[in-house]
Image (cartoon, rainbow, N blue to C red; front, side, top):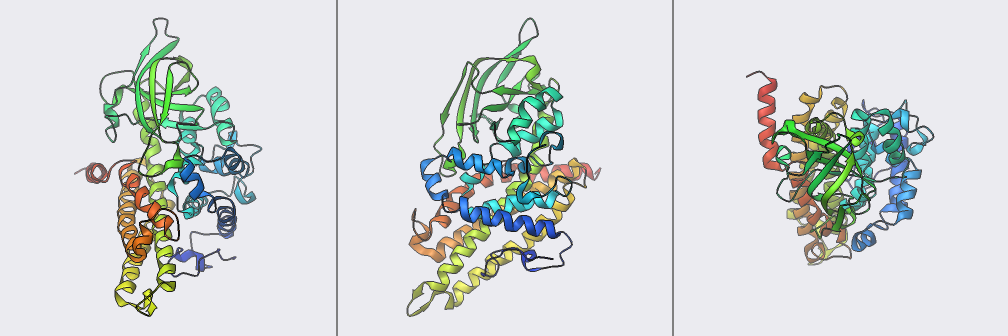
Length: 422
């Protein structure tokens, strides 16, 4: 079995990279890991600092990403009926593609160290593809899903509002059915819409029923529709993700653009969250490794008081403590990846939430320690410590988005109690 491409820094990559008998990883996984690492090192990592400063990713980079099959692969589980003609990364076949191939792409893409680019270059495939594949009509899939995975469209998920975050059931954007029943008129505001600046299509959640979770529907809306206005949001980090504020003013949407059934929207939205939280967990874990690796290299070469920084016991302890956070989380993450396609969604959901909370919390701690190792260089934009500085700002969105730590911890306890029939 081939080995993975791996860093020489201890702990900078997961243990399976150095194993040839891991129960989860087959030759195709190592082949994919080689392919994605070489792609990121050649085309993504050298450019992310520039893209983040510019606040956008060049169209050519997005087209290359799509042509190599990354968008089709991001719409996991693969929409096999709608990716014919698309070559998956590393030339792998649809039949051999599994949940660990999905995890490898998420992990290796995050090695660039810039969360904005990870989100921005994805084209919305991971959030826009699965809901349409699960709930869409054949006509909707042909019109929206097929172009999405080929890179001909970009999608965004429009749920969060200025006053509504984790409380999805409380959203206030309305969708009023026209008297003839042929269309809905949408009014409201959406905020923190990732990729919203350049997306062609939005999956917009709006209220069609009572003010509860059972009164929400989702609509597939071309974003050039009259009445939609968008403007860039200025956030602390993830500048290249296209984070957007969106206003909906008397937006007329054909009734056939409703995804699923009327008032089924909460179910549709929740169906995306388990994989999103798994994705966030994998991403946060890899960003921790990036910060750890950069700090480790700095400690080896930086000399203070006549000796390398790493020769100080207090610095070595920092790296041991960081590694102690990474490896147990990696083991838990791999167990969840394995279970993600083998467990009922209701049972998997709290486990994915646990990973999201744990990995993001550890990233906060590792990011801080990496900055301590770098000193002032870890606080400066640009230069040797730029990735550590970037991660120190990006980490906050991972702690809050996809469900805040406080909301998720409460949800985990309630869901597990309910599942245990206690």
